[in-house]
Amino acid sequence: MAVKNKWMSTVASIWIQCTSGSLYTFSFYSSSLKSSQRYDQSTLDTVSVFKDIGANFGVLSGLTYTAVAHPSSSIAFGGPWVVLLIGSVQCFVGYFLMWGSVVGLINRPPVIVMCLFMLLTAHGVTFLNTGNVVTGVINFTNHSGTIVGIMKGFLGLSGAILLQIYQTVFNAGPTHYILMLSLLPFINTLLFMSSVRPYETNEVDEKKNLNGLSLFSIIVAAYLFSIIIIKQAVTLSLPANMVIFFLLVILLASPIYIAVKPRSTHNFEEADTDTTPLLNNVSSNQEHDKNLLQAICTVNFWCLFVTTLAGMGTGLATVNNLAQVGESLGYTSFETSTLVSLWSIWNFVGRFGGGYVSDYFLNNKKWARPVFIAITLALMSVGHCVIGSGLPGALYVGSVLVGVCYGSQWSLMPTIASEVFGVLHFGTIFNTITIAGPIGSYVISVRVIGYIYDREAARGGTEYCSGTHCFRLSFVIMAFSTFLGFMVAMGLFFRTRRFYEQVVLRRDGRL
Image (cartoon, rainbow, N blue to C red; front, top):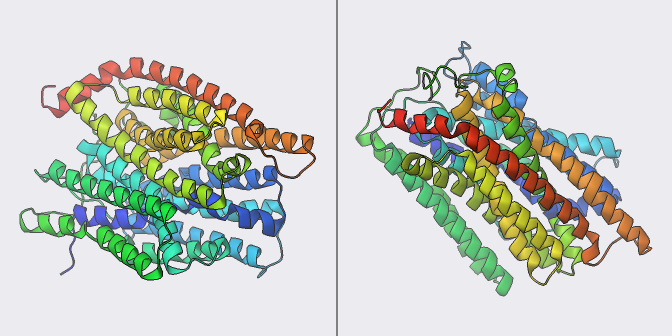
């Protein structure tokens, strides 16, 4: 008999998330895209911005989830699998057409058409992410920070997982990697999407098992980190690579134990649940159970929007240009590919840590969760300054700071949105806020980084720019932007302090 409980749903979501973060490996195949299509840096940045637009314009995925997958939906034939299927099909079509353009299967498309291919692919990822994250929040409402951190963490970690799979099984250059991206996430989603569904959250050992999944995710991240460092230091033989890959597969399969174990001691029923938001009746004048239009009319919504604009916008711009920054500073192609892989690790640390740590301090110290957005934005400012300095090793140190803090935005913002506005329209609201990411990325990537880079290259009379001057001013501007975001986040913190104190009291049964 097939296992059907919220733990199996969570494990299936984790497995889907493990292959859903292809967008974070853009730097790995961007050189192939740039050379085959004969793009300059500004044009390549324009394509990457469409990636960011698609990846952060998830309003349609949120509306679709509310319509067909939420427990309150009146549609009989539906569920999260519908949302996941739509997303996987978009990813397949977008990447396949992109691969066809690079290898010459189809004529070299105009730039706007390539942008649409990228947009379609990235938009599909929002459906995968929404299907898994919203289902997780519904299943674990009292531990929303932890479950969002786990889901977002594996999405960030998936970039390193995908690169390890490709480098072990194929390793035939970035062009073939694009083909793999069209097939692997699609097939993986088809295999596990039927297990993702909302269930009653009625288990007394809920936090214990979530801690087990958290420990598992940390072990996977540590293992991937070790692999990346080892491969940078030595060249491994094919048998050694196969053993490493086999161990990774075993690690990724291990959470099935948690899905099976609760079956013997707990009775799970598929959700026909009360969809009242977690914070219902906390206070008559607080903002919860809002629909999108009601949320947009609040100050808290726009505070989250601005902090997302600063944090995710500059973070996206950094990862999209990581390879080019390394190239301008004299890093080898192997070193820049290592930086891209390590970015996935730092991204995971931020996503997981942001949710888990903020849950701990909220429940034990009554710290309002927005304070962690403020802390991470302040650290991002430091990270941008470090990268902009161009000092030896600064790109490694700066990318750690920016990667961790950028990742934390992806778990903190959705969690705060679910608590402040409720879970009924959660998917639509948090996906609307994420639109700020590509807006910030466009301004920084195209109007700042691309413009300054091409200007500096033109001064040298070459197509490529070399030296610290190529990106220094751009990272100073990004540091200033995240500092402004820090100030707004502090304002949100002071606005919600009393609100979060009531959250803790309610969870403890004292209100």
